[in-house]
Image (cartoon, rainbow, N blue to C red; front, side):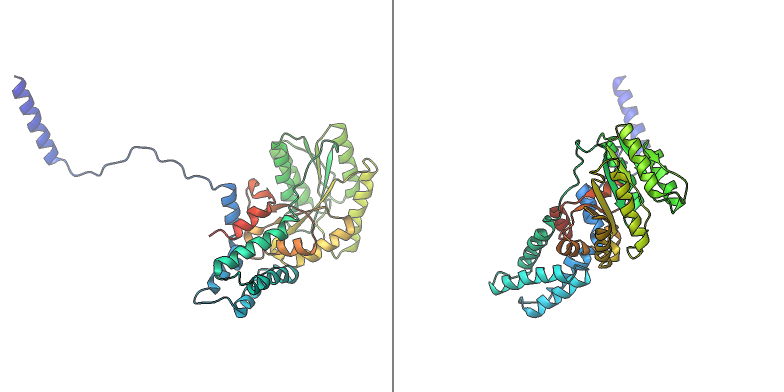
Length: 341
């Protein structure tokens, strides 16, 4: 009986197998979702256009070259200037290369890249000074300045979210009273992140808004107060003077405020960023810089130009739209990202 059953079962299986069409095996093991790029990976991606203009193009110079000579160094200098590294910073880098060439230290392309990395890092390390929010200064007042289009209001929103995630109580002041859109944008950031926003109607006195905000921040035991200001051209003397008025008004409540004057600069404007920084420095004594839109430009070399000429601390850089793409400036990471292949 058992034999007949097994034989019958075998015949059925053979018949079924011969009749069944061929099928492709399906992998039922769930695939892992693609990993998000690391913070450094996003920095590398964000600086891709600047990297192309500096290190990739320099690499191309070595194709077919058998020796390191003056002609090659001249071509490297041209590429550095094209990337908006600026005359002063470029001269600093080239002087170092010439000295190393004289000492016969530049035997190949690897030696040149190593020399450039070292000297670039030396330039930037002097301006790597992260913003420190102190408990002694409460609320810690940050006055945000810069021209229209630099990304100032968006930067304020991202900083506010970052500070809140660090456990700090944050308040925003809509001091850009010339643009209704600026007030609405800041209020949207506040609603999204449950952060209080002090605002008045369009056309109000921006100094009065800052004054009211600081009073409110003190009363509510706020840790960080971010004050937006009207985006203005550095050539508009009356508007630059208004920034001075805002500073004077808030010192009547706290003679140490503002504790940081953060200038937001659009990296894509290249050398003009230096002119902006110099003018704002004269008007309100800028204490820190935020370089935005580095992901959309090949002119990221402006960071070196500013470091060499102005020596103002670079607090933050923006390399994308994500909130984590506004990041504390790290000189070593920045240089490594430029040379990452």
